[in-house]
Length: 289
Image (cartoon, rainbow, N blue to C red):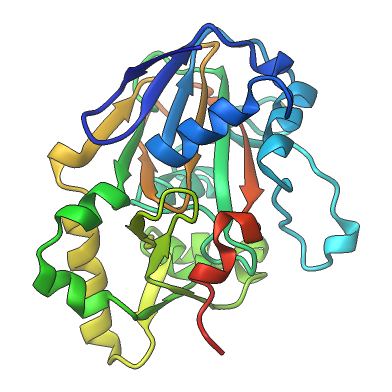
């Protein structure tokens, strides 16, 4: 397994590994160590079908549940795509594309769920002729660099999150979808330490809309200031997908956003999120009762 840096603060490209052959006993411990250390992993020249993709995700933990009745959950692939069920491509002003545009806000996946995500693992299946990149930042690197006066404003605080909040920034119709309205507000500590490394990261997203114990307008100003600090250009890594890529990132220590593409063209990415467990520091981000 050969690794090379993607950015001087985080992220590595990994070659000479077949993800379909990785097992808990063979290869995964090195991958998990790299994940905890570098936050973003890009694997090249992979050929994962859905079954192999899900199997790789399960090495990290439980495939994310997006049902209110977990007992009804069946792990399945999610498609990040503008392709409709009838085979047509959804137009730029369509409801599906509104959700894609909301994903072009800086965010961390699943902060609006009762079970926060540990990882997202994406593999492109159909790429557009241009655009469609994903941008990443390390909220661990940004937190380490942040002026102490700004860190003290948020240290020890609890952020409130809502799926509808981020969707409403794009369009009311995007916020009104049933799968958006399904989830109520959540609250998570603003800083998530990694139990494997001891390093802290700011845990924040476009879904964040409030701070417990702080007036709403003051809280939104601080959230905006923190996201702006973390997403300064020198913190950003831009990933342009090629077929055969598998990209996995640590939701505890990064933010990301999609980029536009020619919306008349199909763009389809296979995606799974993995739910954080106790070994991933879940209790460290859960607010005290």
